[in-house]
Length: 166
Length: 251
Image (cartoon, rainbow over all chains, first blue to last red; front, top):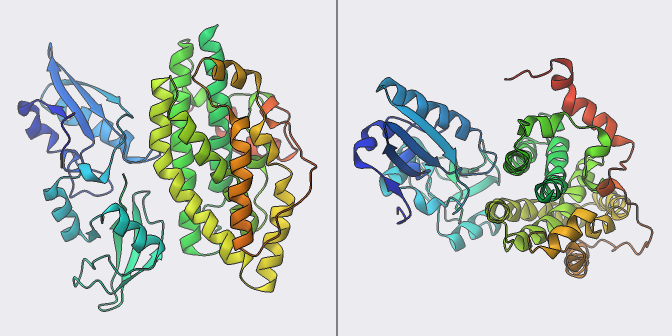
């Protein structure tokens, strides 16, 4: 779901689609929903970027990557960071969620189900390898701020779960 | 002058996150297990991320060429306004979780209030931070319960940690001059009003963890005024080493 506050000019989309999240390379910045605005004015492109988590180190890299991607097309970019409204996992596109699952990261559950899975030991997170929900939480924190670690009790595969953030 | 007051206020808020983030960062690669190690560094990253948002805003306000890095790395000890609680050293894991929980409860209450600030940037940083800090508090609170209600040894160590850290809790609710000024402008948070709810919430969790709520009424304070404990100098020596040794270096 992309919220109505997003304003991206159509002719910039093909270039934006080339910029990925450095931690989850299958997701473009558009899939992730971190681009809140991209407009061209007098030859300069102004991009508003919102962080997923405050300390996410990917943000600096994404800013540099955006500048480089547009520079290749001979275009100048000004990237600014906006904090409000705060990013939510609801802003990840459906296509992005699908790509994420194929990549091996389980998609965020609803807010209530997320809490039950992370705190109540309920078996709700679906294994990205075999599809079973017979899984258990290994660690509330994972390899990046946005993920937790799970393990499948059927196929024994460990996998990442993208935590619900609302 | 108005900007200077807001600047001081922001630093008072942000320094808590910076120093606690630094303390947790020290544990990177030294956690008792892989999961807790990752958790500590994740929490540290959130806190330092929040600090960056605050310092970037503070640097913009001053508009004299200073950057977030100057604010983080190039101040003297007396110029840091964090509470004593967050600078206390990492002794054992129970102590680290105790320090974390006693700060997290305050931090979440504080951010919920700051969300209503008349200052849009502070309100936005707070709104973002709430999502992260709720998760921190769940983690640290869970560990207090596990260790408190665990083995005889973990219970004893957890109790000692809480007894030791308790003396630093009252300072969280002191109002600095910057606090008073910004509260009157509808920007800052009146932390003195959070005290009752704080002790109620903490006491409930301690009881659940089968721990005694300390009844000591002796409290240590000073950090908010820049008078720090002995530990602070060592912490800063570590934190500031690169910028002091190689001025203006960049990654």
